[in-house]
Image (cartoon, rainbow, N blue to C red; front, side, top):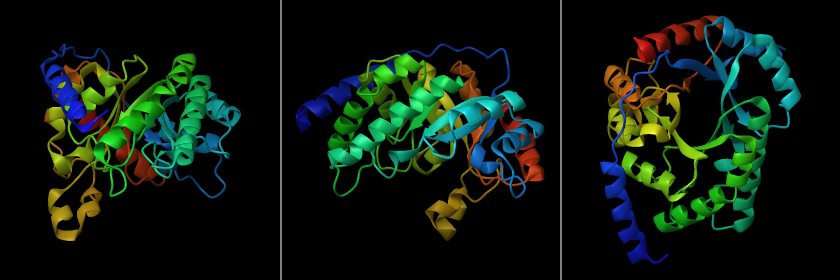
Length: 297
């Protein structure tokens, strides 16, 4: 695709995505809460099952995993899931940052294609419906059009695996200089023309570029999962950009009532997955109670 066609196609798609209506629908049940397994620290020697139970006892409904992982077999995870009663709320594809689908080296891109295919397979076995993927990274070596084309090609190679596993690929908005607004996000998903691709909306990640409450209306039914974290523009300005994440949920610049109203109006009924520092049982209980107020208050 040459630059002119890329831009013309993009303009038409953006217009269509922005005008597409979103049906308002209030979910019948509250948004469920989850944490990443790495947030449940546990005592020394705590098993995977123990850490699942920690999350359950704190009031969470699900666990997010980072897969593939040689230390986390499907059997171990199935046992922990059964013993705790928790669901697998989401899976993060582990190689996507180190070997992005946008990399100029085809061998590196192949590692994430294979990793995503395996994560989808494991997700299907675990009853998980969503695997998070960072689609690529724009940098001095990779321009925007290259990132778009390579990541689309890599994702298309994984669609059969997603369909077989009945597990969706959920693209996440991150600090990768790529897909910085909801219209681009909708366009990226729609360009793949697959019911097995949607969006993993990270609320905290987009504060630096805009307002999270503007995203759900445009994403609509494309939205498959939520990452829950906070961001303070003041801390970012005073202490450095990444320090903006160093505030407790509800104490930064995310307008949670507006965001969650927009989420409800989109018809979203999935998980809110915390992506913040975890800790012991007391810390998890605090996060669970704070999330309940923010998500369903």
